[in-house]
Amino acid sequence: MTAPLIEFDREMINRYNHSGPRYTSYPTAVTFHEGYKIEDYDAACRDGNNDPVPAPLSLYFHVPFCDTVCFYCGCNKIVTKHKSRAKPYLEMLDREIEIVGAKLADDREVEQLHLGGGTPTFLSEAEISHLMWKVQSHFNARPSERKDYSIEIDPRSVTPHYIQVLGTLGFNRYSLGVQDVDLKVQKAVNRVQSVKMTREVLSACRDAGAKSINIDLIYGLPFQTPASFRETVDVVIGMEPDRLSIFNYAHLPEMFKAQRRINAEDLPSAQQKLEILQITIKQLSDAGYIYIGMDHFAKPDDELVIARQTGHLHRNFQGYTTHGNCDLVAMGVSAISNIRGVFSQNYKDELRYTQALGNGELPIMKGYIMTDEDRLRAAVIQRISCYGKLDIPKFESRYKIDFKTHFRLALEALQPMIEDELVSVNETTLEVSAKGRLLVRNICMAFDEHIQSVGSERFSKAI
Image (cartoon, rainbow, N blue to C red; front, side, top):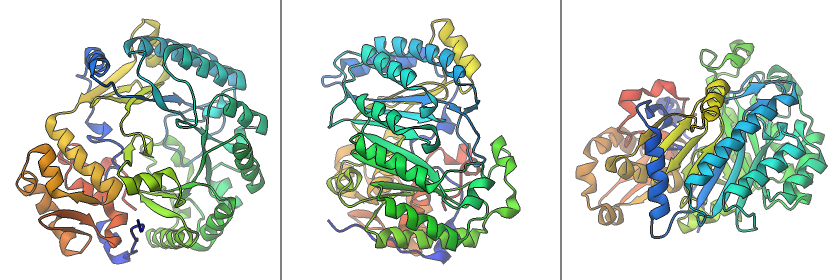
């Protein structure tokens, strides 16, 4: 199947470059509320266990520690030089694993596992080995070639031996934070990382048997120019990662304290950012990478590209994935689970997280139970964000609705984008055009029933 093209239309991007969700879930996390009860979580686990064919599991563990702060970062993190800080946190994570593991049936196999942060590789080799042992003691989690065990890596925090240990523990997918290779940019965001270091870690990942390596880049950082970022992308293409994530930096110092260390005057202008993005898309396309959607690119033989072609692509809190059939069970501070359409989020601060587990309780702060209408709209948003296309008759047959009647208001909201040829809708198909692909978040927003109540200003801009 030929990959869909991207048409970079600067006028359309400027017109529609509004704030909006990235749709790693629908409804988005801002709809979660504190009226949610632990009993709701328990009921979701029981219902999932009692399904005729229980869904497999995708496990996520949040490791919040970093030994230095990157000024652009908006993640939930604890910055410390003291490696001993991890020990009491891991003790609480052990307790959460025990409690959650007891609620899920033993026959529910773990198909996917991911360690995120923060910096998961802040943990020592012994600590990460213990964590994986603990997981395998309480979940049906045995690594294999067909499963995805992934981890986010700060190349500054690991050695080749550490990567070998990860390989022996079953990790086979690695995501390396790079952001930019220009030293002036690196100094401005407090993340100095040599190209040599990144290459050595990437090589170690390959030696450890990685079946996929991703590199993260960020555009819109201080002192970046179209020319300088072109050089960064050229260097990274030379490393031949399987996937690339090219994120737009959202400068929100009122929300993220670390960003106050960045001078707004040093940031590239909105038009420079668009030029950077346009050049980057051409570079990656010329190098053979396929645009998956929402900042993600992959080689033509990558599982994400194949999943997009075969109809098995899914989007969740970890981005694009091939494991949409799984219940997502997340542990650690701020971690978000989705079990049978029942969302829950843990406390974001370590103290309350620890207090809850110290009392033998799950550290859930808030959550949300999807309605039938939410599930319907989530299905539309999934199709648009993963494939850019919806077969209307098939959708109507599956959900027993008249599409244009049910989504009358959404289609009215789409009308300006239809007139601008970003998306087309006829009797059989809703399809995102080549120049609408970069604005797919805006198209999804038309079907978001909650966006008016939560406000789009709480999210980053589309580009």
